[in-house]
Amino acid sequence: MSSFSPFHLIILMPVLLVSMALYFLPSIVAKAREHPQFVFILVVNLLFGWSGVGWIGCLVWSLVTPSRPRPGA
Image 1: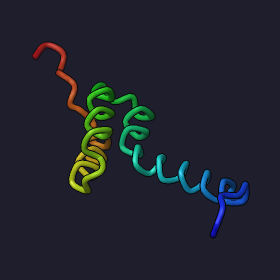
Image 2: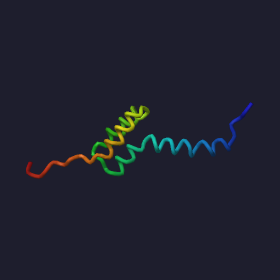
Image 3: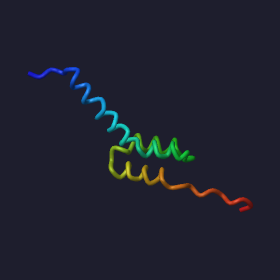
Image 4: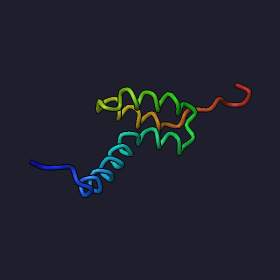
């Protein structure tokens, strides 16, 4: 019978932190780029990031620079 030891925690914590950072990578990128739709990217990432399509969609969305309206247009 195995028991949970502190050694397991030492191994588990970095794996968990790296996994969470990768999962929320699109949101991290959007925040770093000061994307105006950061909150929406975060919500979609949180709800649909578990699917590969949702995660990739959020990553692309966070990397796309939104077009700014031209002055006088």
